[in-house]
Amino acid sequence: MLELGRDAREAARILALAPTAQKNAALKAMAQAIRESAAKIIVANQADVSAAKSKDLKDSFIDRLTLTPARIEAMAKGLEEIAELPDPVGATLSEWTRPNGMKISRVRVPIGVIGIIFESRPNVTADAGALCMKSGNAAILRAGSNGFRSSTVIAEALQQGLDAAGLPKACIQMAPTTSRESVGEMLSGLGGAIDVIVPRGGKNLVARVQAEARVPVFSHLEGVCHVYVDKAANPEMAREIVLNSKMRRTGVCGSAETILIDRAAAARNLKPIIRTLIDAGCEVRGDADAQAADTRVKSASEEDWSTEYLDAIVSLKVVDGVEAAMAHIAKYGSQHTDAIVSDDAATALKFLNEVDSAIVLHNASTQFADGGEFGFGAEIGIATGKLHARGPVGLEQLTTFKYQVRGSGQIRP
Image 1 (cartoon, rainbow, N blue to C red):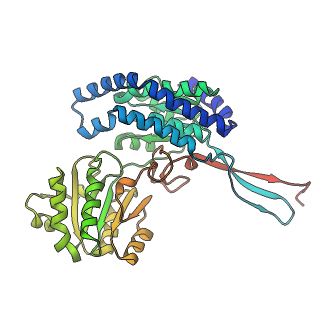
Image 2: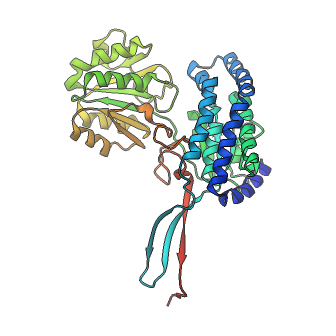
Image 3: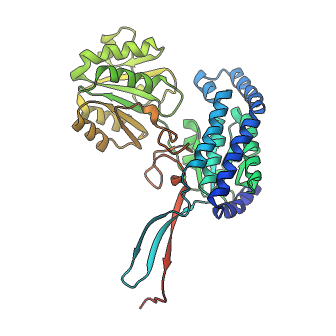
């Protein structure tokens, strides 16, 4: 692991100075290598999925783990899309001239070496490696045991692309082990080699990273996301947004876990929303009002309001307007993603301004909490902290800045 760190640090120095054209050529070569390795990736993934099923893991977990030809092609296209994005490295953020004539510029630069620890999503291998590389950072990837075979083959394809473009293979490296000790070594910084850690996984992994990391962390602990249906919501729009927010993919962090319905319009919204969710195969756990509206609704416990199910389960509560909805979100939410459905512009603006989450939406599904949907090409994760990066972590968020000062002989008196 220490050798990985040393190699990554050296590769990062080279990559930081690589021209945009060379990085883009590497990304396109990576995409081609992914396509050429598709059959090999499928074989490795089938072994991963088979092993996971033998452990009786949740269907949502299996879905995140599974790669299909379409998902592999999407992975390759994602690399090509990142190649088309503007290179943030070297961009001037601002510049000004001091009274003494010195010219000062704030310029984007890579962070350095980024460690990514992830669990069940093999596609993170490609997304994270590519985003780090395009933003001038070397990446050390540590995959979980359930997707290790798939991720290893994908990482090999990425390294083929780097080599084809004349960049060091150490720009993107996979930890050769899934041991817990390897996580601990990365959290310690690998002897000063790692600048930032990004965890992508379940609550236990992220909690461990946040508790033990001795380097900065971009992470979110969990995605307890809400949809609030206001009294001024279009009923059909509300029903469709709630259904998509919960059921499009239940295992992603942007999946809605709690639905809040304004009491002032519960008569027209409550029953249709509950019926739509249950008919789609979602278990609804609700308060007394929800249970009274549909006998199939199970009783929600206090714990339900703060639970990230990552499954076809949702909690539902009737609240007294937007103030009560925002109070509920502040108490039980995780500052990840929250949405309001309303045709009242003033109420929507209040929600957007006052809900303290990384992503706040008006009349749109919480499933848009995704870097690709934000136009970032892909994302390395969603950050819910308030320093440096918040929301989808894309190319710009993987850079920092430095000040370049140009003088003409000035000395300080």
